[in-house]
Image (cartoon, rainbow, N blue to C red):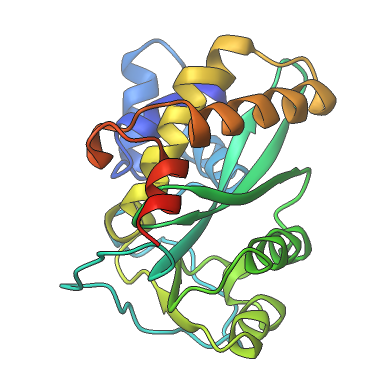
Length: 230
């Protein structure tokens, strides 16, 4: 599963057929059914639409993508959230984060052993205690299309935006965050369990927000950009 995770970060446009082919070419004798099952467990899908991409629950409302062509020029104009698979030495967890689109500042995060919407809503509520964005963007995963999640945003009078073509295309900044946290911390540390992972991510996100210069922010840290341009 870690191998799938690493390759997905490099080629998020790979669906089940191409990922299966890639694994076979590198000496891993797996079939499409197994790859499909693993990618489903990990919450991965190709960024290019196809006949087998997952869809949210049919009862959930899908919101339009509001960011196309929009100029983002200040913190709290747009926030975004996403969920990603995190490998450990024994098992895996899921990580969710809420990030300010302009400053790349991580407002709140947490890990869970399931992809249920409850822990995503909890992280969202923690982020909303620090401010209120004009727009909140996510993919169309069931965690983010749930009534509990969208209802929390509507109650806070936040406009909801959802990706239309795949998360790595429309929610690009948080995809870059996942690449940073995995290659700069998770893959290097190889955390033994959830307690070690949580402690390590606490250190990493503190470093990411307050110490790590970001080339896209003229080498400011996310925290300084978030604070100085509000």
